[in-house]
Amino acid sequence: MRRSRIIGVGHYVPPKVVTNDDLSKVMDTSDAWIRERTGIEKRHFVEKGVGTADLAYEATKRLLQKSGKSLQDIDFIILATLSPDYFFPGSGVLLQQKLGINSIGALDIRAQCTGFIYGLSVADSMIRAGQYNRILLVGSEVHSTGLDLTTRGRDVAVLFGDGAGAVLIEAKETEGEEGILSTHLHADGRYAQELWVEKPGSIVPLSPEDLEEGRHFPRMNGREVFKHAVTKFISVIDEALTTNRKRKEEIDLLVVHQANLRISEAVREYLKLPPEKVYNNIQRYGNTTAASIPLALSEAVEEGKLKKGNLVCLAAFGSGFTWGSALVRW
View 1 (cartoon, rainbow, N blue to C red):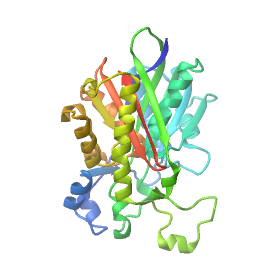
View 2: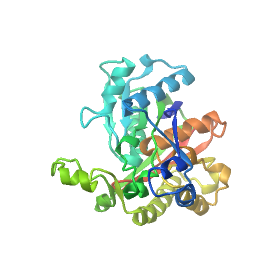
View 3: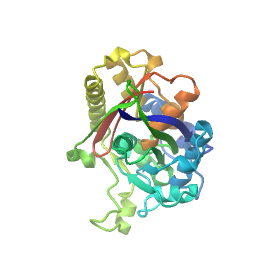
View 4: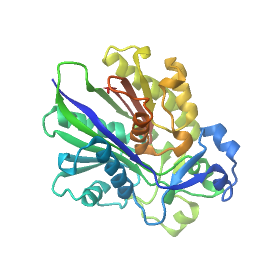
């Protein structure tokens, strides 16, 4: 059977650290308020002039260094982001240009917090179909330049950070259980406006009044998002386990999109997993959207918490609403 497996990981965060106390100097908030509601202690922000493709490039460099692979091993690029460098072209081709590997395909995915899972599913399908042998999948985000860093925007602004994570996915012929076992994707556009950036867009141009009202900043119905996130995380994880005839206790490591530590804890308690089987790094990075899962995978490998043969469950939920999961034999 032709399967796809992750053979390399890497991540990068910009060096600038922004603590909760730093945010309290520019908005009415506090370290205690942010920690209690989100679990976040700090996050990383880019310096002026650094974009999404720059972070993706750094994560990819680290992936190649650690995996022993070269640029010539990459057949296709998938980049997941909600914060592209420009409206167009997509950041995937900008990453390709920075890497210097011209002519191969580059695909951008805009599934927001679920972007990495969507990208993993696309890469898995392409490899299983025999179209490509090695695919670079990167989640990369620069949120800091698009946040309302005032008291008006604090409910959203305190959540997000900048960063990138990358994985290299390779084809392998195997008779056993190895690699990406299954992926599961869902969406419900009825809730699109519960977490969104309204403008600018193609429906109505951005006006001076819009800028004054802050309609170009992200807005979120926090209560609605939290409620749906917990239920959708649980259902899509159950879907992955059922599809592969696995039990909850067989999971060696659960890596969920790092949206809120309270959400991760609620999911862990439902699955009755011990804390050491759930990887969280939102405390250090905040919500890095499409980058959060590959960033966590890279750190988990570095820390020895993710090893060959482990059964890993990945799950994400975010704007759209979109949600998805993947079960992987590492």
